[in-house]
Each structure stands twice: as C-alpha cells, then as structure tokens.
Length: 293
Image (cartoon, rainbow, N blue to C red; front, top):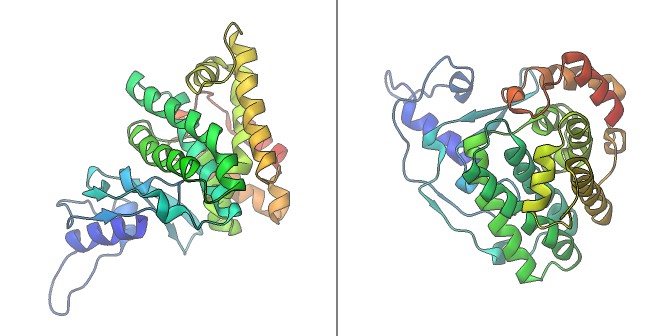
C-alpha cells in the first residue's frame, strides 16, 4: 500500500519534459528536493494484514538503497480515497505474520497515545485500539479462523492509523526502521522486539501516560498509582510477546553487534524523536540500544 501511495503521487508530480515521460525519483520528494503540488489519482487500499494501517494513514515508508535507510514521508495526499477492510482477507495469515503485524499495530497505538503531540481525540482512538489488540492478538495467533478476533484486530489496525497520522510515532520506530533496512528484519517483528525496551525506559522517568493507556485499554489498574499502573501495562506487553513467540532481544534476530552504531545513528536522527515522552540524550539512546541487543 505504501508503494502504491508513493507511485501515485510520484506520477502526478513528476516532470514531463518530453517524450517518453521522465519520472522524478520518489527520493527527490522524500529528501525535500521536490515538493508535491497536486494530488494523485483516487486510490483504493485493501489491507491483507492487521498491522501497518496504511489504508487510513497519511504516511508512506520507503528505503534508500544507497544508504540502507528506511525513511518515512507524510502528506495529506497519502490518505487513500477508499479503504476496504475485510477480516476475511486476513484469515489466511500464518501465526508468525499475525504476531508481527499485530505487534506493529500495538506499537502504533502505544506510541500515538504517549506522544507529546497527542490530543484527547487521538488518545481515545489509540486507547481503544490498544485494548482490542491486547484482548485479541493471542486468540488470532492461536486460531487464525477466529473471525471475532480477526475483526477486532482489523478494526484496531485501521482506526489507530487515524491517531498516529495526527501524532506521529516514536523511538520504537526510530530503532525499528534501521533494524529493518540494515538488518533485513520484518518491520512488525522489529517493533515487537524493541517495544518493551523503549516502554521500560520511558516509564522510568514519566509513567503517567502509560498508566493512562493501561486504564484506557481496560487493564486491571483501578486504584493503582501511575508507576504501578504503567508496570501492569509493561508486564502485559511482555507477557503477550512471550505468548506469541516474539524474541526478547535484537541478537535473537540474527543481527551482528557491528550493526548497532548504524542503528543508533538512525534513531538519533529519527524525524519524530521529539514526540517521545522521554527526552532521551544521545548517550541514553546508546545505552538503550546496547541493552536491547
């Protein structure tokens, strides 16, 4: 879907100096060398996984092969004209893909909710989506034909895209993009491994938003203080990850330690770094990537 979005706007905004038509590389737009001036053709998206949410988002992600960097770009014209979300199209996902894409959607919900750019409306959407995912992902992982669980995940994946299109994402994605681009790891799986580590580091300094998310997602936190409620959320994420077979560390993904400096450099320059609820220093990010390895 991201590829279709990119091709659509690239075609509409490329120069046509002569015949045959000459396209401007999409990376010209990613790096700001050219700007989108007109919308593309009407675009319909049919998601076959419950994870990225691209069918309702204003973003598209691409890889620059010259630098091995995964780069996101946002535009109001990336919103598709039509999204057809049918859980029957997702029924055939194997368990590992169900797990990875579901954790991708959970990461979207969590990072949108705790973002410094969050609003009451975006939090309402993200909190609802997080609750659906936490309650249904393990069910869909264990029984792919559980259409009630599939429907809940399809809804959560799509609706949370409306939230993160307003708030942006956070440093889980800041680390996951280079893990995917440089290490060849599927995006959802990279998010899944990194998510508990970034959450734990943020909770150390500011548990408030995580406690509020725990409440919004329906976890049993009534009467608990912010630190305890945030820990309930973190424990639930870790338990779900273990239940659906997510590795705990980057090293378990087959990555070499030599890749860590490149991962760190990308995370430090991540476009949404300022949205993180914890204002990490470069040195703190270095310690974090080392600990998650």
